[in-house]
Amino acid sequence: MFAGLSDDNDELASFAAIPGVRVVKDRAFERNHSGVPNALLAGIDFAAVAAFRSANVDVVFEHARFFGWRLPLPAVAWFPDLQHRSLPHLFSRAAWWRREIGFRAQLASGRSVVLSSQSALDDCRRFYPRARNQMSVVRFASRPTDDLLAANPHEVIRLYDLPEQYFYLPNQFWRHKNHQLVLDALALLANRGIKAVVAVSGGPDEPPEYFKAIMREVEERGLKENFRYLGMLPLEHVYALLRSCTALMNPSRFEGWSTTVEEAKSFEVPMIVSDLAVHREQTGGAALYFNVEDAAALAGYLAETVSRDEPLRVRQLGSSVETRVAKFAEDFTDAIKRAAAKDSAPSRAVE
Image (cartoon, rainbow, N blue to C red; front, side, top):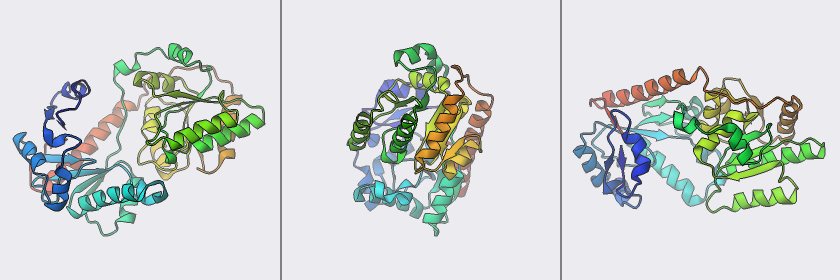
């Protein structure tokens, strides 16, 4: 695993502790490294390739970085999603082209491609119909380590002054995450005299105009008691709140493979999610679904759930977790081996 010289050693320690993993720090992987222009113009990031060769790398897993069309090693590129093609109005012109050029460069370079869902694979084939790259679906799974489950959920709920019955929305404040619909649904319930509490965590976008607009609307519509913004939370608190919530919410307009949904699956938490193809794929029909524009439908699900007045329940990891994690590892390994075989190279992956 390659990192920049300035990357935090404490953050890298958890990776270095994994058997079989070696962390290599090299200036070629600094955030301000100038290798990307070389990769695009000369066709190769010379400094990165030198680091790969020095570490005896056989296969490169390429994500959010392009090492050039002349990279002398088999490479597997990860396309997390194609949101910029489905929701182009949410991107500045520069941001749109930055993503588009990156994906086109990787496809034109013959990279093997990993996508996180069948839905993302379908999008890739729809938007790049001429691509003949080797493509694989590798659905990541979530199995938090025991130290992240050490926080007492009852204490965490008291810390944030939440009621026993609350819905949890741990999405970043990006426009496509659709917090606006949640406000509209809560306002509908308030007008009917129904109190539902949604605990919200996650950071604002950069710049934070959308976050500020949402919080201003919370004030103006008198929803502070219903839409409880908790801020950026320690991960152990996120898991404590997830394990104890009445249901996880994800109103997003677009996902490649939702991390919050995957984490909810790991604890068998009930889910109320937007009716996206990827959400259907990810939950296997075991959720409540609403249109991304239908606040009344979401309000109906919240009202129905609140009316049951179920007691607080702290959930443990479900029985399917280990199987899903093993399947993720198997599919990722298979994608790496296929890429290596395609290029007649040994099959050992290094990120």
